[in-house]
Picture (tube, rainbow, N blue to C red):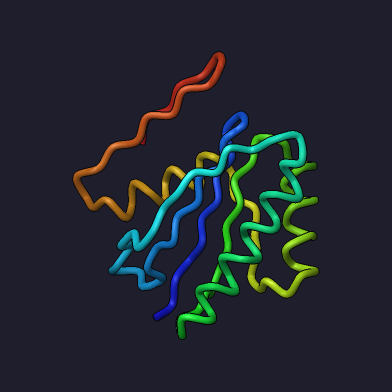
Length: 123
């Protein structure tokens, strides 16, 4: 089975989800949260690499990994670290892109409200 690994970081928590790669599926197969410490970059890259290996060892395949971090520099550093470790098809997505993908997977009756410090958008 092909899955996508989504990783979103907010504050000191990383949330990871394995989601069916089929456009019509969008089924969440597993999700978990990781409390990050001062070694957040290493912890998170090790977790992503380990998750990819575990999925592969189970006879399945991670076809894409999507990263959503508030700091673009940290996101790029993480992307490079996991790519250099052999994880393929790793891309950085914005919070808006990640939320829109989630709303699309929920179906036609979904709405999305994003609020930032001084802006709000509704899709």
